[in-house]
Length: 401
Ligand SMILES: *Cc1c(COP(=O)(O)O)cnc(C)c1O
Image 1 (cartoon, rainbow, N blue to C red):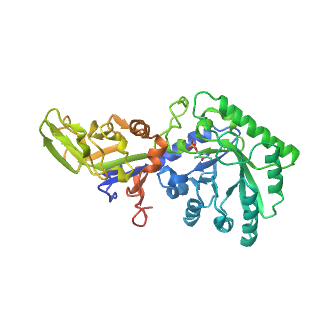
Image 2 (image 1 turned 120 degrees about the horizontal axis):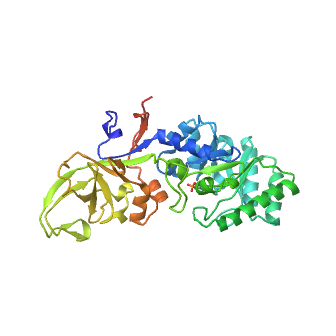
Image 3 (image 1 turned 90 degrees about the horizontal axis):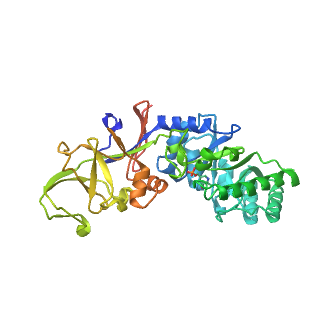
């Protein structure tokens, strides 16, 4: 447990990331692939809040992982700067000012308009390097991408005419793969696969990486794995939704969030707690202050709803979560004292608070909760029960290899 490690220099709050769990989850993902589809590890939003660079360092050595997907050019360049060898693709739109650097750094771009083709082709020529592109196809999200019709086909033909572009991939994204009813996903897949068939037959173009599967379809729709799958939330040991079937796969969450009790007091009956006085004691209570708040990304929506774990027991949040502090009920945890660990996410004894629980109770969801954990929280990386790295966003990272 990382709080017992002498190398953990953090006191107020820290995220603990278990890298062994990353490897376990990856093994499970690799085992459920059809036709050995390559794994594109989705580490956008700083690896869903876990720290993209550290995770990519681990995955750079795993043969099944063929590359990374991020949301922005800055995220991709950060990986390249950190010495990550496998390529990163940017899943969304990138503004033209960045194309030359992307070509130079070998960052793969998503393309879906003629203007983008033209600008990327020119930037790649200027850089003296081919630009790697993936064509986005809109089969139902109405977010980005060409339509899978005749017009879309002629777009692909025009992309083939750009001498400085290398068409490495073509992809689409599912809107409802995490729902029990897969009918809309089947329609999206049908549109996408018949379009890539047309590209192959009518344009004689075999695009090396056809990819459409996100976490939910990786788990439940193996026939849609194609050449590569884009694994996001399941890498981190979380579930795309509670409608996704959980049999046959055991995911282990990577992340836990810990803090320590800052202060304990006894309150008489009839005393209000926190802003707005939304909680009032009915009886005398013992109350602990936790020095974490919504400025750390801990959801204010947990006011009067969430729990933390202290000494292996649940302690309810009392009143509103403030910017930097909140209060919990330790009346039934008499052993609790200042300095003790409070587990905000993770396991203590037989109790566990999952990211899903935090998401549900706060009216956010697990993806959002994870990537909103703030940069004021340092990250501590563990492997084989040892801390191997810490990352504190106000200072340099420290490696302990
Ligand atoms: C975020 C994202 C993913 C990963 O989704 P998960 O549900 O986390 O697996 C895959 N593809 C695209 C285009 C995305 O934006």
